[in-house]
Amino acid sequence: MLLRERGHDVRVLSAPPRHGDDCGVGAPYYPLPHLRIPLVAPLIASQGYAFARSDRRQVDRALDWADVVHLEEPFMLQAVVARRARARGVPALATYHIHPENLTASVYLDRCVVLNRAILQVWKRFIFNRCGALQCPSQSAWRRVSSLKLSSRLFVLSNGVPLDDVSVDGGGCGDESSIVRLLSIGRFSREKDQATILRALRFSSHARSLELTLAGRGPTERRLRRLSDRLVRDGVIEHPVRFAFMGHEEMAQASREADLYVHAARIEVEGLGALEVLRHGVVPVLACGPLTATSQFALSEESVFEAGDPRSLARAIDAWVDRGSGDRRVEAARYRRVGAQYDIRSCVGELERVYRWLVVGGEFPGQQPGSIDRIYTVVR
Image 1: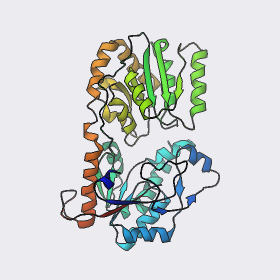
Image 2: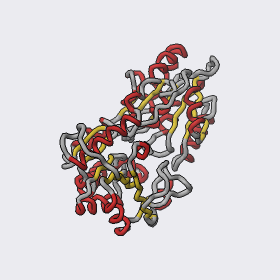
Image 3: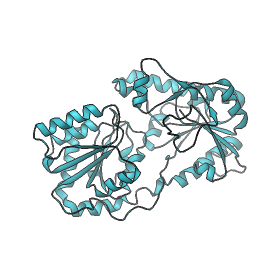
Image 4: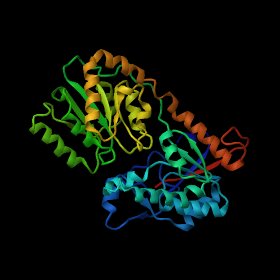
């Protein structure tokens, strides 16, 4: 939408949205049929994905019109478009939005190094090396992708968040209470690892004073509910875990009322969802690991724990509880400014520079003459 506001003509090549979810870009200008994969279709849908089947006529129509192509995901459609774009001399840019493990975690193969390395090689051969540039949303993603020795130019650029004004209150701004409110927001899935948060409660010395809210939905919800019920039955926690799916305003309110925000994802390319919460003023406890970038938002070592380790998480939670509400409020105030470098308007401006470089050449990604009138984005 911001590209359109800046005067560019942006058209989408994808399957039509289901359930009215158009991701804010509207219906596709070049619609494609949905691709249904037998046996695994329910699993794909539960993860929030939907695939499009390529249509050469529609792809060529889009390429005839576009100045530059932006490939949003590394799937079959994008491989087809990348090949056709290169053959027709249309420059393309790809974004590294997901790790292979984001996909293989659903079938318990995220720890299969050989398989995930093979997927990366497929993406490299059929998508990334057919593009002139590859956007890495975080330093963590850049480090991984740079080991592939791609022919495309790599650059680090956040996907960005809107920096709207937020409340000056935060960090548990409710009434003083012996209860410490923990908040976690994200899709319920293996790679987001909410199970580690629940297991950590068994190792926390303050477990009975903690009140945890898990906000989201997804395929692991039933398992998470069983784990939380067991915590109550075993007397580990006094306050039952709250499960909720929140809209934007509800999320903002929950963030302002939380004492601690816990983000346990062990596979995360950027983790902008965490940034949205932190800007409301709340102390984070963020997972740190080779495949998660969320710890980039931490301002101190006290807000980091080892991904997948419930004891490490429990120690971090207990340390912030022991420090008291006063220290938490002081720390929370620091996080209201943490999003400045992720302003989506600045990120879009940098993206425009790369688009221009793809079209007119010159120094990468410096300021270049010329303009781009037409951009279309390939989405899943």
